[in-house]
Length: 100
Image 1 (spheres, rainbow, N blue to C red):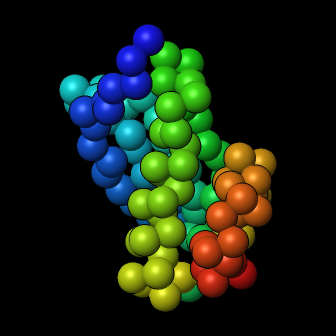
Image 2 (tube, rainbow, N blue to C red):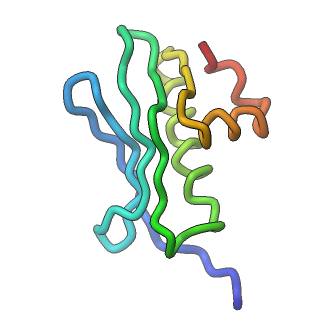
């Protein structure tokens, strides 16, 4: 099977202290990295979920890449309670500057 790039959009939304980065394909949410703010400058990643149809295609990493960009721009530190996000931080030492 050829490796084709998925046409997608990642959006970030917040509702009070909770928020998420959502992976959309044709307007349908097929992935999410959910977080909660713990104060003004600390974000806790609680959960990452990707639809089975996109498994193994790097969607979780794309979501976390966007989250890292966001926290760097807003001077926010991250506590990755989500096992996936925690593992990704270990694989990506260049993201270590955002860890709480």
